[in-house]
Amino acid sequence: MLLADGEGACRALAYPRLVGDPRPGDRVLLNTTALAMGLGTGGYALVVALPDRLPPDPEGPGHLVKARYTPLQATVLGADEQGSPHHAALRDADGVDRMPVVTADLHSAVPAVLAGVLQARPGARVVYVMLDGGALPLWFSATVARLRAAGALAGSVTVGQSFGGDLEAVTVHTGLLAARHVLGADVAVVAQGPGNLGTGTPWGFSGVAAGEAVNAAAVLDGRPVAALRVSEADARERHRGVSHHSLTAYGRVALARADVVLPVLPGGFGDRLRAQAAVLAERHTLVEVEVDGLEEALRALPVRLSTMGRGLAEDAASFLAAAAAGRHAAGLSA
Image (tube, rainbow, N blue to C red; front, top):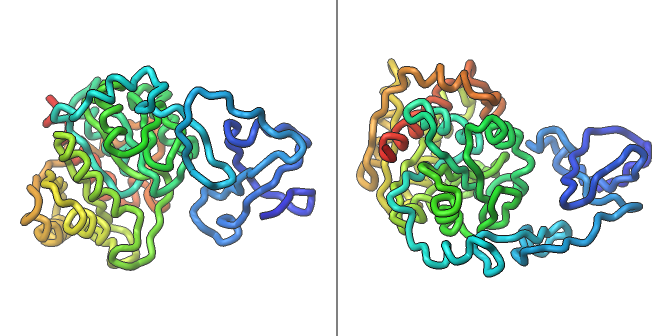
C-alpha cells in the first residue's frame, strides 16, 4: 500500500460505487501490490479510499454482501433475495429448460463464444454468468462493457463473491436461473472474470470451476457445452494443444456429461487436439465442429481479442475453439 503524495506517479483505477468519485487534487490511498509484483492487473494500481472525502453510506436496497469481510465489501441487491422483484420467479424456478450453457476457463473466451453463437443464430440472447475466480468487480471488464454497449451481449449475472453485473446472484445455480428466467437467455456463457490464478500444479488453478459449472448446468436441466482451452502459441507445454486446465476441469471435476467441442483444425495441430481430447470421451460426448466462417465472425466483434497477451493473429486456435463451442450451443438452442 502507499498513500499517493507526489513521490511518484502511476495509473490507478477507482470503482466509484465502492470508493466514491475521485476529483483532481484528491489524495488517494492506493493498493500497488500486484502492480509492484508485475502481476496481471492491467497495469493499474487500485484506489482503496479517498481519505479526505469518503463516499456516502449505501442506502440499499439489498442485503447481499460480496467480497465479504474485506475492507471493500459491497452490499448489493441479489436477484434471488427476498427484497428483489425477481425473488418469486427464482424461488419457484427449478431448471433452465434445456438451455445450452457454455463453460470456459478464461475470460478471454467469452467474446469468442459469443461470436460463434451469433454467427450461427443472429439475434440470440446470450447472457454471461461471471464466476469469482478472477476479478471480483465485473466493472474491470472493458470487454463486457463494450459488448453490452454494442448490443451483442444481452446481459450479465455476477455470482459467488463477484459483483457488478446486471443482476447479482448467490451461486452459479441461481445465476443460471436468473439468466434464463429474468434475462431471457437463449444461451448462457459461464467463465471467470478477467485474470486467473494458476500455480503450475494439476489442481491449483481457478479455472477448475469450469468443471463445477458443468455440474451446475446439468443439475438445472441445462445442456452443458464445454469449451476447450486450446493454444498453438503458448510457450508452456502444459497449455499447448488442449490445456491441462481443460483436461482436469472436464476430465476430473465435471461429473455430469457435457458436449466437449473439438474445433476441426487442419494438419498436425488438429491431430494433436483429437489425441489429447480423446481422454475425455469416456465421460463426455466429443463433438467435432467445423470452423469455416468463424474467423470472420471473430474479426467482426466490437472488442479486441486477447488471451495471455496474444491476439487472433498470434493464437487463432484459442479463439476458434471457443467460437466453435458457441456455434454448437447455438444449434442446440434453435
